[in-house]
Length: 112
Image 1 (tube, one colour):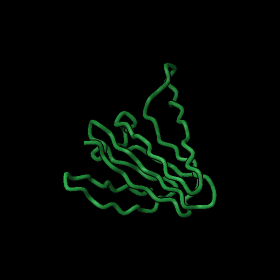
Image 2: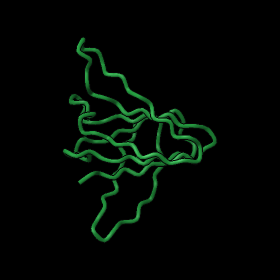
Image 3: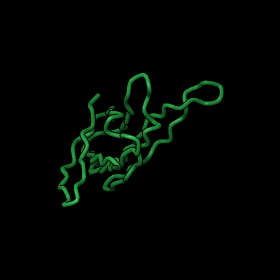
Image 4: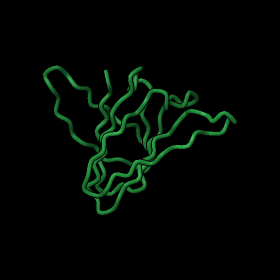
């Protein structure tokens, strides 16, 4: 598991450098703050990437909440909103998994 590094925008603008993903990454609650972040996933690989963001919620029966995978088709980019409510209170992180990592990169932009 690798901790994703944020790119923090400034009034003057900031260049970003997409970073490689791993099969399971984390986002710290300190990065998300109270407003969350936007995770931009770019798939330069030859097959689709199924991205799942953990959900710390529980169903009324106390079972873990279901996650809905986001498909990032080969050769495309997708922006995913990461809510601070997705942080697992026991670990302090949100977990992001990828079905494939070949030529898949990310940019994480906190909403401030």
